[in-house]
Image (tube, rainbow, N blue to C red; front, side, top):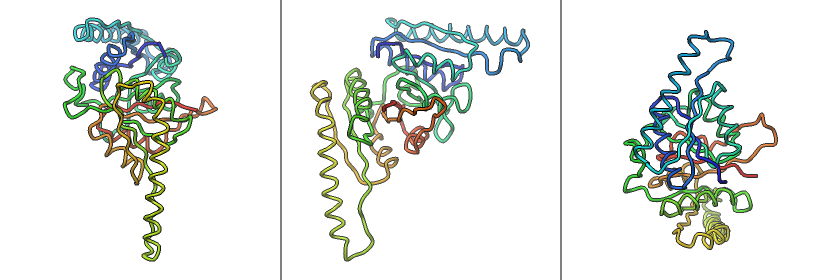
Length: 295
């Protein structure tokens, strides 16, 4: 993709944190930044004209303040702004058709991801045609506005659920992000053990687990090979571990500055379901989470 990095802002701490992260990402990638604000949260024929005009003016001032602050931090940035009356989710999804990346804010640990409306981020994440990133309010990587991750954060973590063609968009996104940041990729694959409580078969189950882990490690290595060749300067850590995918990823992302997960595209434009692992990551990951659509 060669489009802009698009971030939705609403004046909240979550929106501000998302804007800081998006600005750094745009500067790192050498892409333009589009700041989007939707001032209307209800049909145009409902609010009084004076109320609608006030919302428009406040939205315009918010965009101007945010643009000024981001330019101060990133002088080479190329930001543009868009003030719209289109509901936030629709506006973001429309822009997602041409964007390289969508960025949204989340209120914090244990709360529903949001941008303007409580369910907007989840809705957009489930339907966006391009990768979308959720940045949590208070994330230590961007909380002070510096946009620089902490000293203990130096990895782009990518969850590889499948090692076939479905993994290609995720790995491309993860390697591109790591290359731009000068960090390493940690490719993680979670396995369900063959374990048994029957002592008679415990040794056989252990051997089966070890054999299964070795086979999956080989598949992961093969899947990563073309990306290692394409990005020879990006260090790679392979991690295959037994356990629930959510728990394995959460542990792996302890020192991550970005976690990359996948979402299958759905044939119906009305479908926007996210999987349980992605839901868990959005609520509990200690860093921004990117959701990449794939076939």
